[in-house]
Every structure is written in structure tokens, then in C-alpha cells.
Image (tube, rainbow, N blue to C red; front, side):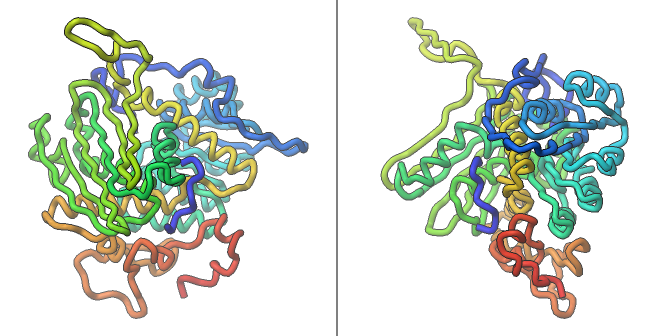
Length: 441
């Protein structure tokens, strides 16, 4: 695979109690004090890695809590357009400075690394600005919704020699990690079929769906990435379909924005197939499960519940309560763990466990699913990658629906050839200095 092996391997919508906005949510008290992930501290008198956080909404607060208890890391500045939120976060976590301007964080000479927890439309420009200022970057997915801009942002970091980690938090969920471990250790033999499902308790408002890129980009992308994570291979092609069953108000939206339900089949090398189904509503809570059928057995995850209590009655036997009904409750531990993992990478100067390439391929998969549903056919992932032309590492464009390429341009023909448009990252450069022999002449 083109990504580094993962050793561990937006979230602000108001509304009713649902996957998007619960009636109440608070950060557990332990976030600001103790760590679930034990990281070795350097016994030497090393200065702490100083970091800044852009965005003090729900996700930013979760990451701030993780940073606050990670050894060898110190948050020195936070920002939020509503400055009162930045001030409150600074007071809560003992951060000395706060501001309303993200660029104050990015250009701060004391900051070594930046957590980008802002709305998605700002990610690419903020990543590029961080690279230009020599800052390492943790960015919530997506890097960008545009493929060319995604490549530009990744290359900006790689050329600047700074780390870039993308927040694909499900890779850090202990349930999915256990399935990954079983696959890697051949506990169920060789994989045959991989299954993922993702169903939200209730649909988001129409305003959230409109302009969000469609169900494959804003929802199924996590499950598509998880199929690749569990398969341990790069995918070949995809077949996707979508429909609307729950919220008829979105039916007039363009493309896959009109879908509240979708299914995908992803083909991997060796005849392995992965199946994904997503739906914006389930009547029984947040449904997030994975299954791998192998030649010698099967491993599957259950949903996560607030407690383990069971009720047994004449007409019912089962869990006393419904599964978690909010993504931050369901994946809280995963969000904290991924942030701690980036802190560890910074302190130890080790490779990040979830790279820019991982984020790029997740986007390629969601775009291919969208194209498949629109054109009602199998789509090879190479079809999406071939649309990108880069005249330089940070000047890329899409050449969709064109057979005419600039002189000397040879498009990447598969995921494994992404190194024709993506510069090796800083950790790859350290391992193999020869990789920096110019990709772009």
C-alpha cells in the first residue's frame, strides 16, 4: 500500500438529539487530567513541543483535552472566530493565549505544530499556510473536497518537511482495531468478505446536506476508508447505488446529496470484496459495525452502549439502554487516541499513523462511489486519479473529461502510482533520501 502502515490504526450542526446534536454533551472530567494512552516520556531535559489549536467547537475541545494530558506537549495558543469560545477553552485547559484569527496561531513563532479543527472549507488553505510557516499539522478530515487541492495541500507539507496527520478517527476505535488485529494475525484465516455499516439515529437538517458533497463524501467516506484499513490493500474498483427513503425534502438536491441511503461494493486484490451500507436514520440508535469473514472464521463488532446492563422479561431480553446516539459519545475515545498518537509522533519524531495519502485515498474512494452511483456502473479508482494534473507539486488541476494532457504529462494509472503526483512525506524522506530525486521535472 502507498500509505505507511498504521500501528493504531464536522461536526457542529444544531438540532434535535441525534447523531449531529445531542440534547446534552459534556467532556468527561478525565480528559483534562489523565491519559488512557500511555506514552513514554523522554527522560532528558527536552523542551516540550508547543502547539496551537484552530477551532474551539466540540471537536477542538476534545483534541485540546487530549493535548493537555499528553506528555512532552504543551498548547500555547487557541483560536476561534467567536473569540469568547477561544477564551473559554483557554481558561478550561490553561492555555496562555487565545485569539479570533487562525493566522495568529499559524504564524506564532512559538508554535511547532497546529491542530486544524475548523470547518472543512478552510482546511486546505490552513494546511498550506502551516506548511509555509514550517508547522507540523494535524487536520480533521477532509483535507479538501476537491482532489487537486487535496494533492496541493499534501505536497505543501511534504515539500516543507513538516508532518501531516489526517483525522480518520475510526482507525483508532478499539473495536475496529481488534478486527484489524485479527486480520493481521490471521486469526480468521485469509479475508474473503469485509462488511461495514453506518446508520445515524436521525437525519441531519436539509441545510447540512445541501452543499455537503453527498452521502458518499460526508458519511460513507469513513466506512470506505475502514474497508481499506481492514483489507490492508489498496482498492481496485467500486459499484455504488443510492436512494431516498427517510427525508423527502432532499430529493431535489443534486447528485448523491439526494440520497439518504446508499450501498457500495469495493473490489480488492485477491478477490476480496468489501460491502458498505449507510443510512441517515436508524430507529434504534447509532449503528456502527464491522465484520470480516475469513477462510477459518469470522470476527464482528457490536454497537457501543452507555453501559452493559441487560433486561430480561417475558416479552424482551436485551440491553437495558439504546446504543450511543451521538458520534462524539460513540467515538470519543478514538478522537482522544488519535490526537495522543500525533503528540507521540511529534515528541518522538516518528512517522504519523494516518498520513495525507490515507486522507487522499479516502477522498478518491468517495468520489469514485459518487461517480459510480451517477453513471450506474463499476468505476475503477484509477479513473479518479487520472483526472489530476500537477505542473508543480503545489499547482494542480483537474482534467476531467479530457483526453488532451500537457506535453510530457503521464497520469497516474493506479493508487500505487500516486507518487507521480505526491511528493514523499517527511518520514519517507528520512527513511529513503533518494525518494526526493525530483518527481516533477
